[in-house]
Length: 130
Length: 180
Image 1 (cartoon, each protein chain N blue to C red):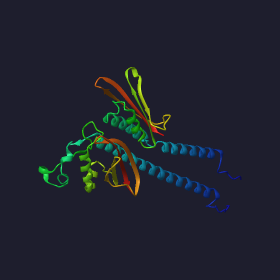
Image 2: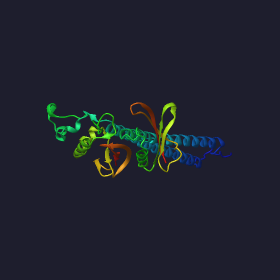
Image 3: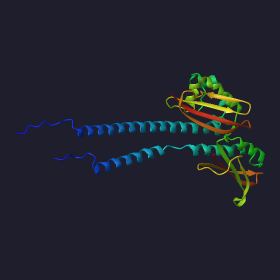
């Protein structure tokens, strides 16, 4: 009478499948966390446009004031302000010092504003993590 | 009649019991681990939503009624019945409905209300179990603090906003945190 082998090929395959399945579930749950980075970046972008509009730096195209604001943002933030005129032509662009390429997650805010009550411009701010 | 005694605890049974217990233990420990992660994430989601909406209400609105800074703190707190008691349905710090330009008097009154932290916390909508808040509005020369700074905090949601205070650039920092 021969003894049976408990670890047959079937069992090994079943164990392998169980391990793969559990690992898949484990990692998919781990990766399904809510990510609020975009929300915070979006709020930073909204604030940037709102503050620059409120203190009139935007409508005066005050480069020094705009750059001072962008450079005073927290170190982990990069920001770029672009102002579009007629036919989507870029009339002004300012990037925070030390920043270059956009990150993977970007918060964007856009706002239309008037200059001298006649000319209409569109301001766009993009904020990302350095 | 052949009399052979069976061996109850054979190696096979021992091995299968060991495997069964291993699988059972790993199942329950994984279940408990994932439960903790999900529960923690739900608390963080809740706190983030509270912090996000609270920062927007404080910065982007003047509150309701928008002249709430003219009310005496004692009128807000004391139970005077419907006749004299003043109600503030939303605390907003902005000068007007445009938002982002904070009003010095509203900030002063907001800081004054810090002596009634629980009243303020309740009115700001921070109602989760063990949730606390901390607000710091700072300019280059001064800062205004309301709430409790997180010391023994399990979860802290930190929101940094950019505002004007009476026309001068300032930072608005809000932390919603969970007491350990």
